[in-house]
Image (tube, rainbow, N blue to C red; front, side):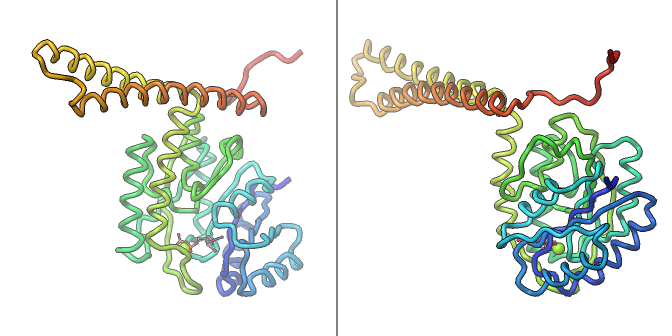
Length: 316
Ligand code: UDP
Ligand code: MG
């Protein structure tokens, strides 16, 4: 078993691959650890697949290649890599040489200090300022604000993880950038270090402004999952109670007004009050259904509702 698994998602990066191998070998060969690198070919159609085949032929001891049938997206590629990784330490890296493999030792040093997750921070980011860097700043600020996990650069792929903090959740959509948030929720010790960033020399960037929108939508899911996945009745039931309270107050007000001779039936407030009360009950019922789902989720898969770091006990 290698100690270290490096995972690289690859989508049409043929020209970058030779330089990438060199850089990876240079760093990992001198790292003093056993290692493997897993390339996940995410449906490339520019010849990257053949290049990866060659690399595997040359060094099957260190290299593993997973080839997708079609393009499933960077997050899916990363998930596949994690599923197949054998190391206790997992490092993610982009294939386009914008991340620098030479930064890997800095991340490893931080893990050795006792952290469970080390996030790269592209302090001098070399991407289009208007379309990428600025929207990403806004997204990072928003994620930090909403989740309470303060990192400068969620979007930087170059991060190092202890295997345990990756266990127990699946990655959907664009969610690989939220791994630190999930890790934080199970009590992982997280830190960040500055890493280098280079402009793309070959190939095209695969994303534009629309990704920031997707990230913000994902943030809703993440926030909900974090705060309420274990107790959805608090959110739905809470909303329901507030709605019922407002609806009842509104109806009571209409009732009182009748003593001054103002009819209730002609006021729009009647509809509002009735709607609120109905929606309130609906919301509570949804919360109850969600509670059933939570139980099915945890109990059918024997997923615990906690995460243990260590257990001290006398072995028999
Ligand atoms: N990538 C992938 N599947 C995709 C899009 C991208 O595996 O559908 C890979 C790509 O080859 C690169 C990494 O994900 O290694 C990051 O992509 P890119 O450089 O385009 O993103 P950016 O650096 O602009 O965030
Ligand atoms: Mg890139």
